[in-house]
Picture 1 (cartoon, one colour):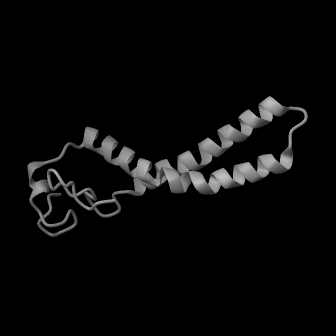
Picture 2 (tube, one colour):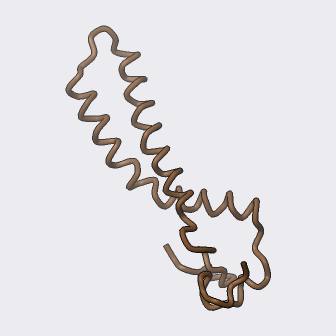
Picture 3 (cartoon, helix red, strand yellow):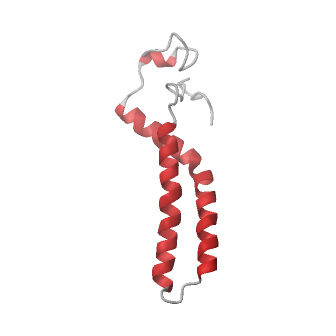
Amino acid sequence: MARRCSACNFWFEREDGYFVGATAINMGLGIVIPAAVAFTWLGLSWPHTPWTPLGVTFVGLAVIVPLVCFPLARMLWLSIDLVFRPIQPAEYHHEHALSEDAPE
């Protein structure tokens, strides 16, 4: 992910630990998506559920989904934050979001 917007020079990481919310979103997606697939598969195949393919698919999705969704989670977190905390003019001009001249 780029550190700054190429169009307006906005620094994406607005404060120390900024993307912790993105990590929480990514973790949620990593749990919900594999569980939804597993429960759907279980519901459609009951009572003759193929347990080994179901388990392998679940574990595979639990590993792959967070890796694939990581950029999406960061973008989603940044979007949510910008809705609630719009960019302040001073944020365009400081050298780094965590620098000493950054707005608080």
